[in-house]
Image 1 (tube, helix red, strand yellow):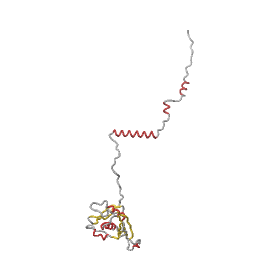
Image 2 (spheres, one colour):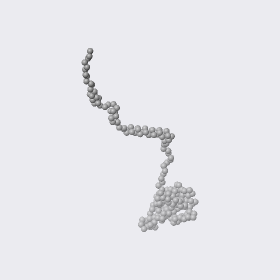
Image 3 (tube, one colour):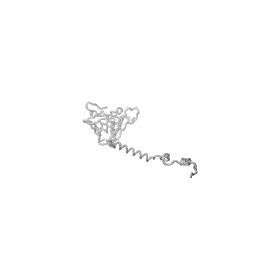
Image 4 (cartoon, one colour):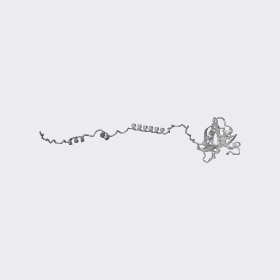
Length: 219
């Protein structure tokens, strides 16, 4: 028996394609399009620390070992002394001119250098001022009349030196007087010790017998 042929329509896949294409993208594609979270400061610091550790390991692997801080002693000390001046120290019982460092060429600083040189005298010379302390220095105009001390016409200066310590010897006073008289503006020197208000005027001329051999002292 022959059956009748029935013509069935072909299935339409357009609808299913539209349905599939209309679905939202998910999975890997969705993950790629998602924004990445920003790295925080703590993460960046940790990353840098890890990088430094890796570099140290690489350096050690090359045979170079890192070194620490080596102590080479105290830092250098820069002295404030800036001027070379002449003072009188003692050699074999006579005055000897010696060059020493002073803060300046002012007579106050020169006398400070004279008293300080006794703590570190050069080889072969000494001082009679090692037990003395320079207490005060004053400058007044030189004149024979004390009432005219501040007369502006008086060109010279009188130096007053106050010293504390044991009684000074003659050569100790010579060291002070002749060192001060190296300054041309100083015409005379008055020296007084603590406990005594007496000021006696000196010039270096009275100590010429203490001049260095084959040398001379200022007036």
